[in-house]
Length: 311
Image 1: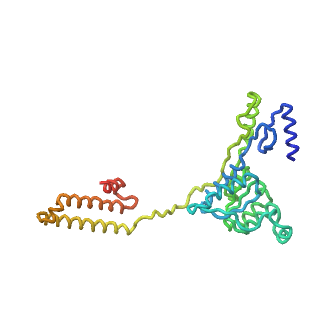
Image 2 (image 1 turned 180 degrees about the horizontal axis):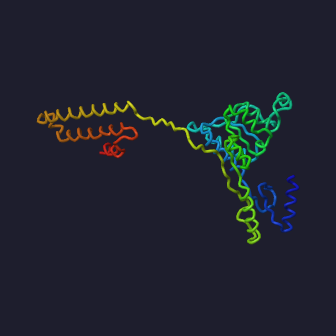
Image 3 (image 1 turned 45 degrees about the vertical axis):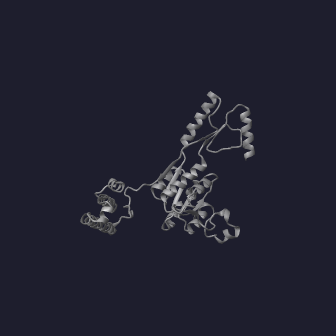
């Protein structure tokens, strides 16, 4: 009851009792401060963790939506959908949450349970790439592990909120792939510090005190071998060698012609010394084909390429 909470806070504040909300907030009241998680930042952190777990992108389903978290998650996850060079994410098509279903549709789906487990079952049947739990509640439902085992063949990435002991055990047993947890201990220490500041100084630097988050995911001991296409030249390297050889033969032919006819009018008019310089310049420039033709690990350095082109 927000009206009651506002009146309650106003009455205590009028009596000189400092009010600081912990973890939950009544933002429109006269309370001194709120200490807890930035819900939008938590959602964005979940999106970044999902991109780390599923870099190729795909579809997702949202379970147990929560104000702030859901908006931050969707905005952060889909922020690159307009770019062709980044993975795209989109919400899976189809109705899967109870709130989106009519009474008739729920009746037709009677074999599927209602509540969070029903939402999870219907979402899993739509074959999303990821299921996102914005609260602990979906992971607390009875037979959660049975649900995961039932749909494990679908290869759905499961991402949850908080880091309770049972959730960390689920993470270790692969019943969830990633968690973004709050730091309750920090709630207490920051709240105590805020009360101390109010009593000693009579004010606070900020009316909103956000705490840090922690992300959990399993890093395998042995990673699969990384297969990267380095776009090496392979056999195409011989094209560079043939081009260089052709230029060298042409330069030698031009030098031989200039030397042979240097006393003739046509050669003296073009200045033999100038022709020698042009021939040597073409030779040095064409030598850049050799380092250009070397793949990674070649003996010729990049400095050689820069020198031959620059000269």
